[in-house]
Amino acid sequence: MGSIPFFKLVDKNLDSKVLVRGKQCEKVAVIKLSKLGILLLMSFIFWGKAFASTSEFQDSCDRVKKLYDTSKYAECIDESSHMIQSRESAFLRTKNYILLANLHELQADCLERRGDIDQAVEVIQTLLKKLEQLLPREYGARVKLKVGHIYERAGLYSKALSNFKKVEEEYKSVFPNRFARYARENYDDISSKQVAVILGEVVVEDGSTYEGITIKVFNGFEESETGTLKKGDYSIPLFYSTPNTGFSLSAYKRGYEPFIVTMVFDGSSKIVMKKIQLKKLTREDRAVVAGVIFTPVSGGKRKPHHGIAGFKKHTIEFQKLSENKSGKEAVRGDVISMVSDDSGVYRAPLSAGLYMVKNEGKEKMFNLRRGEVRILNIAKGGILMD
Image 1 (cartoon, one colour):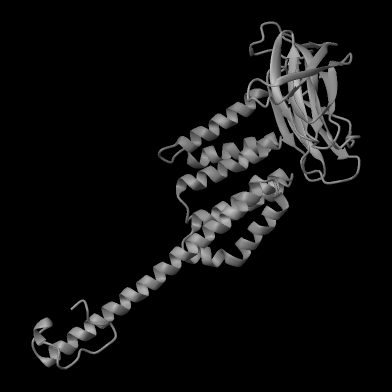
Image 2 (cartoon, one colour; image 1 turned 30 degrees about the horizontal axis):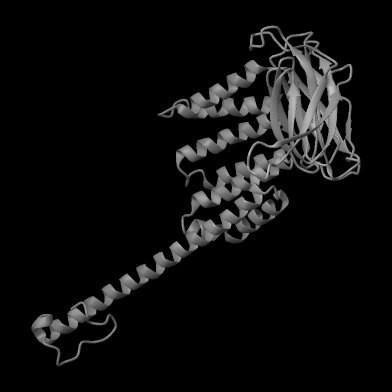
C-alpha cells in the first residue's frame, strides 16, 4: 500500500487483497491515501520553509554580530535596521522571536557604543513593546535590567537607579524572584559606591567623530570607565574616595594624545570639568603609554574611606623586546626612561612593539600597536594596568 502514488487512481486490475475487497472500497482507500499525501506534502513544504527561514535569519544575525564584534557600529546599525524593517513580519510569522529580539539588542549595543544612549534605550523599549508577551519571562527580565546597565555604563546613575528600582517592584512578587533580587543588588551597589559624579565635555582637534573616546577615573584602587555621549559630553562616577584624597581623570582615543589630570577630592557630590581637547599624534606610526605615578593610602586595601595619598615625581623605565627566532625568551633591547611631572603624570611616546615596564624591581610585559593609547597607572611598589 505504501507504494501507491499519492495523486493517482489505483489501476482496476490491482489485486484487491492489497487494499479492501470491492471496487468501492478500493476507491475510498485511494481517496483517503490521497488526502493523507496532500497533508504530508503540505506539512513538509511548510516546515521546510520554516527551517530554511530560521537558518537564513540566523545567518543574518551572525552577520550583524560580526559587524559589532569588529567595531563597525554604523554598518551594524544600518544592517540591523534594514533586517528589522524588511523582515520583521517574516520573523514573527515563523516564530523566530528570539532572533528578532537579538537583532534589537545588537542595534542597541551599537548605539550605546556610539554614545547614543537615549536611542539605545528606545530600541530596547521598542523590543519590549513588540515582543515581551512572546518571549520567555527570563528574557524579558534580562532585557529590562539591560536598560539599567546601559545607563550605568554611561554614568547616568539616577536613571540607572530608577530602572533597577522599577524592575525590582515589577518582579518582587514573581516566583522565583531572582530578577527582583538582582535588581536590588545593582541598586545597592551603585548607591554605596558612588561618592561624586564628574561631568564634562571632550572634543577632538580635527572635529572628527566622538566615537571611540574613553573616559576613565581612577581612585587608587579601582577605575570607572565610560564613553562620551553623542555630542562629546560625559558623566562618570567617582567611587570610594575620602575628602582630601586624590584621583585622576584620563580621556583618550586611538591616534590622539591622551589627556590626564590629577585632582584632590574636596567632598563635593558634583564635579564639573573644563572642556578637554584631544590632539592628533604627531607621528602616526607611534603609540603612547601614559598614566599617573601615585602613593596609595597606607595599607593598600579597600576600606570605607580611602583614595590616593598623593602623586609623586618618579622615573619609569620601558625596555623594548624583540622576538627570538629560536623561540626562547625575547631579546631585551634599549631601555627608555621617562620622568613624571610634579602632578604625577607621565606620557611615553613609543614605537609599536613588545615592551617590558619596570618599577621598583617589578616587571610587566605588554604589546603596543600603531596609534594605540594605553593607560598605565603605577603605584609605589606595584603596577596597575588597564
